[in-house]
Amino acid sequence: AQKITQTQPGMFVQEKEAVTLDCTYDTSDPSYGLFWYKQPSSGEMIFLIYQGSYDQQNATEGRYSLNFQKARKSANLVISASQLGDSAMYFCAMRDNYGQNFVFGPGTRLSVLP
Amino acid sequence: DAGVIQSPRHEVTEMGQEVTLRCKPISGHNSLFWYRQTMMRGLELLIYFNNNVPIDDSGMPEDRFSAKMPNASFSTLKIQPSEPRDSAVYFCASRPQLWTGSNTGELFFGEGSRLTVL
Image (cartoon, rainbow over all chains, first blue to last red; front, side):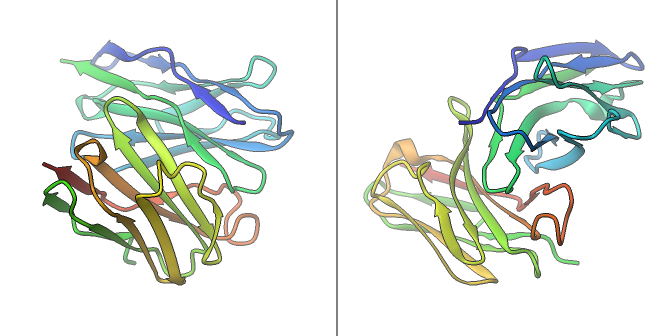
């Protein structure tokens, strides 16, 4: 069974600073996909970034990058130059190779301080 | 393009009543997922469909919950009878065919249906 762990219930970061949100996962599948989603206080789920298990390079999307360490089974999200609008819940998620199981971690609440 | 559409956005009902939540996935997407989100349990996968067929309903809490997908453009999640502990936000999400329609497989979420059972 697949499992996602996010050990930081809450994080604070100063505006314009970088922040790392931790995610570790457990799976026996050789091929899988890892995702980060953002949920602002308005409630919608916003896809941020994707990393495939066979991707050689870490994924980047604008100010978001994914620090993928396959041997450690970790997929940490790095947000550079934090903005006040980054304050939200952040969820790490994983799907299997067939895309038929998509599980989420418990989330980390990020607060960006002015 | 229209996203995933869920209705109702908010539902308040009394214990024992039947509740039906509806979802219209993005056209062309062939996988559909239902999630429940609570403070205590986070985002729980209830059931997912592939090409209108339920693939795994092991996340459905109990027999009071049922889900159907009669065609590619419509799905329902029904709770009968409802209980206060069913109060949550229920999300529907869809995705195109993996590897042919999408190489990543990210889910596209609706805005959620907030259910309150009194």
